[in-house]
Structure formats: structure tokens, C-alpha cells
Image (cartoon, rainbow, N blue to C red; front, side, top):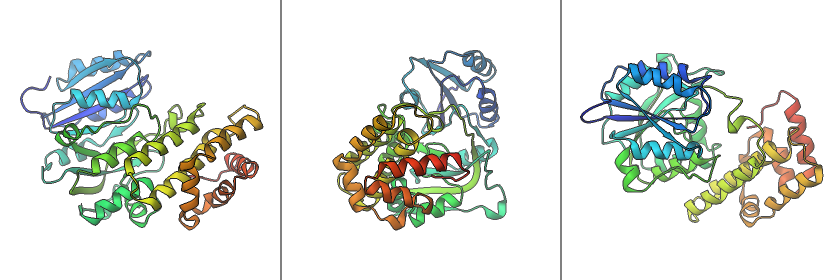
Length: 348
């Protein structure tokens, strides 16, 4: 166990991660910095994850383990926050991996003048910005931070697109260092009733207390696409989760960012259609799927989003579906999205 002052706490929520955990932990323990703690939060795993992380714990005194009943990734991260002793907090998912040298370099430069650090990331499927010639770094403040807050809910803004093209994620909790004092003093936690979009809510809340962000797109983190994760597989009720997130966000915004909220609302509804009501994986009858989809489409928050969003700011591949959804033409949405699902056409 780490003794004395702890510079940073790395929180790793895991649930049945035995397929990926060795890869993740081996990259984390490769960090040289000894002023850190590595907190593994076992969210009720039923596989062989424990035998894997116990071996790493026995070999590395920086590692501690918290075991809890299964409650989802938000509750696991929140438990980690409450357990953490570090000045800074970083999150890593148990099926991903880090670039330890980049994290070590950032740890040596952490400065309380910045409330947030953002690092570069990539997908093992799509690569990452590795070339030193393409490294971008600097400081965001003032209007830039307001733009980043908007970009969380509307990734099609110019700033959000530019940041994403540089390999920096605005929404994800990974590749970031947060100040623990800000989190605790302002009661900022991941909303546990959400399984989708909880990271957007957490980052938006945190950004309300940020004046300066230090950023670099140097690759620090590799996100592995896990087909078994909630995001990438069909789960009944997934569409409703997208729209419950919309309600949560509306409460947070308190009337601000009306255009960004409208764009976010339409995107959430399109994601709900794609992931639950208009997918070939949903075996419910057409009438049942349509009834559920239209029930949500009629909700006041969703209707307001469609009333105020700009079709020109929707990604081109989603425009036809957004146009039909605005007019409540469920049959056409169903046909188009199922066709897209069968063809090699990306819809994000």
C-alpha cells in the first residue's frame, strides 16, 4: 500500500473482466511513479477476475482492491472516488490499456493551477496519434471551456470536431486528471441511475468549476472496442436509457445552451431508435416497437428538441433518419436504420 501523500489515484472499475484484465493491469503497473495508488473496484464479478488482480496486488504495493455488490460502472467509479486519497483522480476501464510513459510524464507535470488535464487517446481498431510531429498541446480557458461544455452535448460543433480530430475525447472520463478537492467540495459524482451518458453528465458538472485546462493529444490511452459492453450490444431498455439521460441533462442545463441541448436531444432519440426500436436484434413486433418509440417521441423534452434543432448540424449520414423522425415517420426510420445495419455504412 502507498504510504504518505498520494499524488494521484487511478480508479479501475471492473466487472467480469478476466478476458482483458491482464492487458490492462500490466500497462498500469508499468508506470514508474511511486506516489500513486491504483484502486481496483470489483463491481461484483462472478468470473476469474479476482485471481488475476490479486496476483498484481501481491506484486505491487500501490494496488488496493475494493469489493462491492454489482451496481454498475457509475457506482463503482463513485466508490473509487470516495476511497481515493490522491490529490488527482484518473479513471481507467478494465478492458482498456494505457501508455505508461505518457502517464508518467503527465504525473511529473501536474500543477494545481489547472483544474483538469486532458490527454490523447485512440482505439486499437483505429489507431492513435503517435507521431511527435503531430503532437498538439496547450491551455484552454475562458470561451474555450464554454465551447467544450457545449461540445459535450453537441459533438458536431467546430471546436468539438477539431478536438476529436486531434485525438482528444471530451466526453470520456479516461485520459483525464481531475482534482479530487473539486469533486468532493461540489458533490460531483456519476449518476448511478444512468448506464449511458453518465460520463457526459459527470464531465459537464466538473467543467462548471474549471478555469484552465492543460491538454495534449499525445497518445496516453487505448480504448478497446468490447462487443460485450453495454454500448456495443443489444439490451432491452437501452433506448430508454438514452432518453433518461436526456432528461438528466435537461435538469443540469437549467435552460442554458438551448441549441446544444436540442442537437443532443435529437441525437439521443436517433441513438435510441438505432439501438433498440429499429434494430434487427429486437425481436418484438413492429407494433410494439413503434408504440414504445412514439411514446418517447411524444414526450415534451423530445418534441422541444426536434422543434429547435438544426438539420444542417446533423451528420450527413443521419440526416434522412432525423428528417423522418422529426415528422414521426417510424416506418421509414425502421427501414432505413435496418438497411444501414445490414450494409457497411457507419451511423454515429
